Image 1 (cartoon, rainbow, N blue to C red):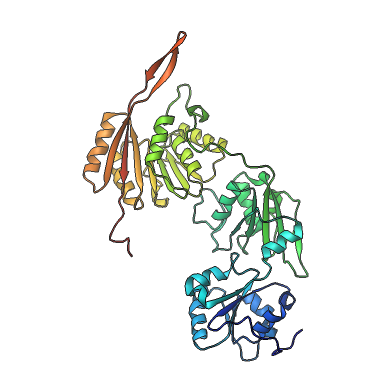
Image 2 (tube, rainbow, N blue to C red; image 1 turned 60 degrees about the vertical axis):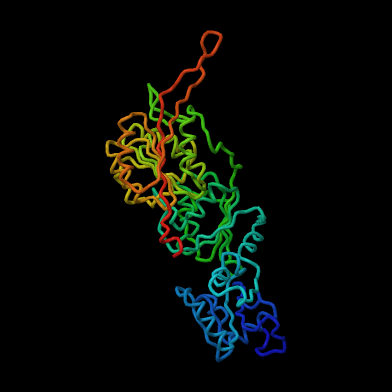
Amino acid sequence: MMKKGNSVPLCGYAKNKATILGVLDNGILGLSAEHLDMLQQADVVIGGTRVLELFSTEFKTDVETFDLTGHLKDVPPLIEQALGNQQAVVVLATGDPLCHGIANYLKKKIGLSKLNIMPNVSALQLACARVGVSWQDAYICSVHTQDAGEWVDNPSKEHGLYSLFKACVQHRKIITFTSPKNNPARISRMLVAENMADDFDMIVTENLLQDNERIVADIPVSELAKQDFSDLNMVILERKESITKSTLFGLEDASFNQRKPEKGLITKRDVRAVSLAHMQLKANSIVWDIGAGSGSVGLEAARLCANGWIYAIEKNEGDFDIAKSNQLQMDIHHYTLVHAKAPECLEAWPNPDAVFIGGSGGKLGDLIKLIVARLNDGGHLVMNFVTIENLTAAVETLKTMDVSWQITQMQVSRSKPILHMHRMAAENPVWIVTVEKMYDVTTMDQ
């Protein structure tokens, strides 16, 4: 071990900069001579409880230490104060501080000009090296967030496992940093709940570079859901089969299960396409589908909003079952369907960016007012009507409101065979009413 105060020059220190030093769980064995000397001569050392204890024997006697565990927001002003006092500051971070580490946070708070980032081998690199998995083609994420509990029915974008869940839907290989609560067992239970457990092989690397290092592999995900793991671990997920690329937009009506013997309560493809266009969807949109019927609009919106979430409600039990079957057959996961009559349940949903009304249950005016009030600024409400009475009720309500709205009439004709020729058969006209909630200019600059 090097002696404190050796002759290695402090070239790592920069004037008026705090050094973010990447460290490993093998202690000083994982540091270069220069980096160890920087740590030994630091006036202020900041880090989590575990790393402060791991390197405590290397601090000089008059060092000031700060445990950032649970106090992250206090770190930026502490660094700036220490730099103002001309003190040498070292922030201890595990692995690569820029790979789901503290460096990005501090860069946003105090600026890169006040930071000197010294990376180490990341936990991700170590985990992949242990099991021989390449990581350049992997999606990297972290669930090291505030505990949001188990992944249960009707989760939301705010859940701590959401980023990993979306990665599992969209990517073939995922590597994730975990937390004591969002651990491999909880991740496994999420995959079981979403009927995705058999789609993945999972590898867990525990306590890397420590005496109790362990690699867990070749065990079904459903079995891993029942096991206990140490707090220090990483999870590698690989799909057993490649992801099938599906059509995003304009699905055939026949691709949806529908009510039988007569087929109904489905927004036909041409009208569905125009309605979705009027909803002005984005990849991360929150969408409400009121009166889901067969679920065609909400489920097609889900394909377009890969990073969003769709909330659908249907009062008819038979149609609810059909919409649920369509969700399952299309393998759509970011979709919450409830059996109820609007406006029931809506108060529990996050404010939407887009809303589609395919059925109102006789409370159209009140429903329009409620939805417009909940719409995010710049959001769109789109309604389909086939009766003059419902169209009139909607228009009369909108006239009393301070919103921008328009009506589009669609009348589609489809070719049908007649003898050895074809004729055009007209379908019922549909009115598409689009409401836009304008941005509140009084809050845009706040």
